[in-house]
Length: 181
Image (cartoon, rainbow, N blue to C red; front, side):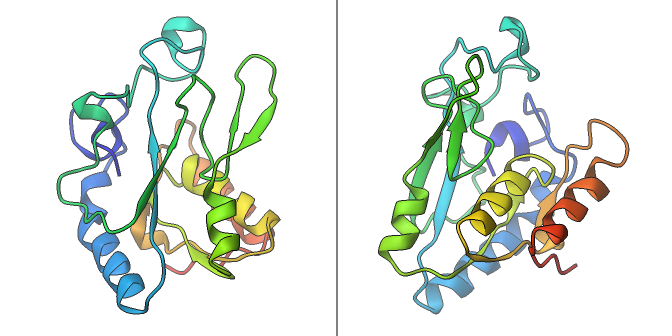
């Protein structure tokens, strides 16, 4: 829910991203009222990274640390820990892991540790984008044995190629992720 994804004019704007802010805030409020922890993932890229098209990667520069585009959308309620990913130029699609764009080596973020320390058994994943970060976070959560829900009304999809949304939802469902509308 960062400006580069969720605000019109963002460098990697996801169509309709700003439309889900109120619903995301309602989910945050429900979680905090229930005493559940809330975690946020935040792309925090260096200005120069192989993740960007300017250096051979697939994406335009986005969410460059300490820029307005990297900030959370101003309407989003922040009520928990922020876990930054892509900090060192790695591809950070999942909240649970990052991948070196050159070697492909994966390493973990602290999210899995935080959830395990809190004896968390189920997670709700919302945000942008459903066919990249939400998808990869949900799949990694399932791989860690967590019950996962991705409310489709609280996510939007990039859909670089027609059908990406449907393929992403199918992959989540095949992994056991619940995807209510």
